[in-house]
Length: 269
Ligand SMILES: C[S@@+](CC[C@H](N)C(=O)[O-])C[C@H]1O[C@@H](n2cnc3c(N)ncnc32)[C@H](O)[C@@H]1O
Image (cartoon, rainbow, N blue to C red; front, side, top):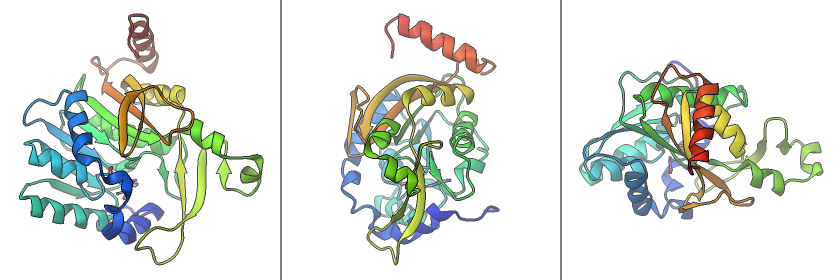
């Protein structure tokens, strides 16, 4: 990989052996059922898993007959994912790459980016708008017209409600970037890692996805371990985004947004 590891790669390299002990990873089978249904995955469909981590979704999807490519910046997480695939006796293509620089060399039928994946996990040099847009650009490039995708991302509404002016003054919360910076500790970690993660509000998500050529179909509350098709909540940790690549890939962001607004008039999200 040409580019350097970022702070998140260093964190996840250390945390990888303990990652699957996190309680939010315990609903993977039901999450995969949800993905198959929501993305209407045809048997044998090809799927790009961005920020695939230890491969919990990628390997389960492969076990069910899908052709999966998992991309992750952390060699440690990918090592766990490869071991999981071997144990399950399935073939999954795992690639180490920074999703903000990932140029897919083929088209996929669907894409997923779950439990943040790469989306909004900011490296020290990342810009708060350019980073998520680059991830969306990679996903859009991987999909054919109308190709579906599902993201779960940090909920900006909850992040704002959690913080006070003192957090801004102390540099723990950056209201311009809608990002938190904190010393993270987790099982397996030798010492605290200074990490920055970015949250999103629904209107911004709709705009960012449109800029990348993706049209949002549904925005739901959908925190890891507790997915559902329910309204976005002010205090829930994550938001789920169900989207598709615009059927007309030449459509401008304004056209994508206008189409979505017309769909809402017709009763869609
Ligand atoms: C919270 S984990 C989620 C893993 C998996 N999707 C899941 O649902 O369990 C976030 C993953 O995204 C990866 N990641 C973070 N930034 C990334 C980037 N810029 N490019 C690719 N992967 C990234 C991390 O290494 C980590 O494996």
